[in-house]
Image (tube, rainbow, N blue to C red):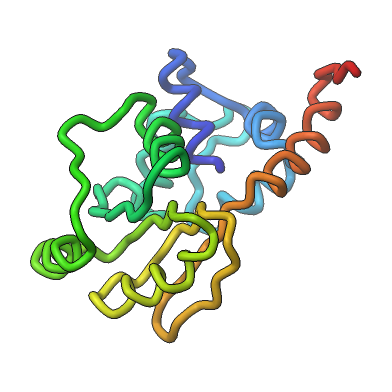
Length: 180
């Protein structure tokens, strides 16, 4: 969360940020920001805050978000397109629809370790199991279907309903008025 906020601040031309400002952007307390960041190193200067660029680079290294990761998207229809639009901001050019055995060969040859499941909910478990069989070790499930984690695979399920509930809680705290 801190890294994402720092990217946004840097893009907006912000050079320095104090812990209270970063806390407000992340919806946490200022002492929580200072405690979290101090676990990694002393990035800030007391009374002067943090250099946004330096902090973003260092957090990126700690979190290993600087290295591009290869991922495979398994899905069809609106779920897959919505995910691509949400991640890329635009449709990804040159995408193709292939049978799973072709995808499996590509996943293995390129050593892809991350997968996104955007299938119909009833196909989610079978898809996660198939990805595990070809070497995928981390899966984001956006299908809406429940999935048990196969051995050796981390599965994160993104729930639109949970996201809406979180947003409905956070919006009033940020001064956004909800009408209706």
